[in-house]
Amino acid sequence: MRRAAIARIDVSALDAAMKEPFEIAGGAATEVRNVLARVTLSDGAVGYGEGAPLPVFNDETQQTTIREARNAARRLEGEEARLRPLLERVEALLPGRGAARAALGMALADAWCRRAGFALRFLFGGAGHGVRSDVTVTIMPPERALRAARRIAALGVRTIKVKIGKDIVADAARVTAVAGARRGLRLILDANQGYNPRDALRLLRLVRAKGVFPILFEQPAHKDDWAGLADVHRLGKIDVAADESVSTRQDALRMARRGCAQVVNVKLMKCGLLEAWDIALICRAAGLGLMAGGMVETSLAMACAAHLAAGVGGFDYIDLDTPLWLARDPMRGVKFGRGGLYDLSRVKAGIGVTPRAR
Image 1 (cartoon, rainbow, N blue to C red):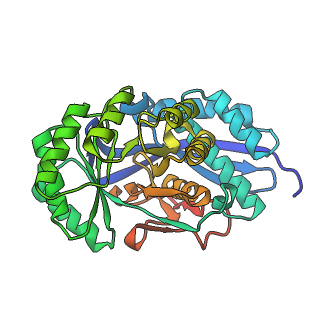
Image 2 (image 1 turned 180 degrees about the horizontal axis):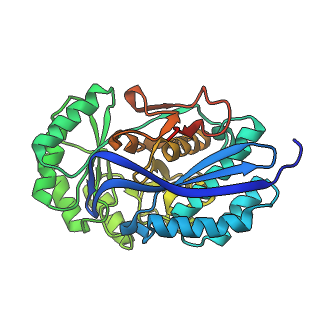
């Protein structure tokens, strides 16, 4: 290919209304206040990226993410469109700013792959051409949880993630209700740091007494309580997934050495595209299981995460369902399909998602 440079980077607000709140142990999201990045190369290729700041997780807000991404963008304009050096530059310019990193890195990778003429999944290795996501039941009363689980099962989805972490008895009732929606459902529990190990083990006893046997327990202890993660695995006899506990390459390397969790949840918004990619490769090399997840994102960021998971391969758990909570997805292209499928086989170049006309 002939050389190209970054001609322009635009960063703007990406707002969307939600059908209903997305409540977890740390709080409830009632509206989407994300960030959209648009990269234009000198030969006309355009790419899009999304940042989903979550203040309760990393203190990033829409306002700070826009400001910091714009400051970094000004320093990137005019640089040659060589992807790896650009992604490394994004990291250096935005230390500890996962959402801003994700927005810019995603847009750069989308533009680069569109210019090169291949789907993003091939950048990550091209191991597969699609992934199937679970769907989440958020914190809600058991009766509503049962209705939600039945709707999820009607979509052809057979794995449900149940949010817990506020009240053990109420959480057990919710998990039991979800399990009763349809025979053969696979349940993942996600406490989002809302429990200590003792709480997590008690919850397991309560639901197992009702004949419910979850397949995975995500973040059943505070992010810094790695011994607690190991205790839940050992005493609860269940695989544990680390989410908040693993946000950097160093975290992934440490987890690989210590083995306190059996699965790592890889999220673009925790650290940006390049570091998330490296975390996935570290975990695969170490024999750790992988989950692809996200914050509350549109189908742009969710599809990008699907490309990462499909391209790298080895992701046994996929949690990319948040577009279902949007009143209207502001994106067009790759979507959450029947059975939770993200079908990437028809994407000709880049992510395969673009903003709708406003």
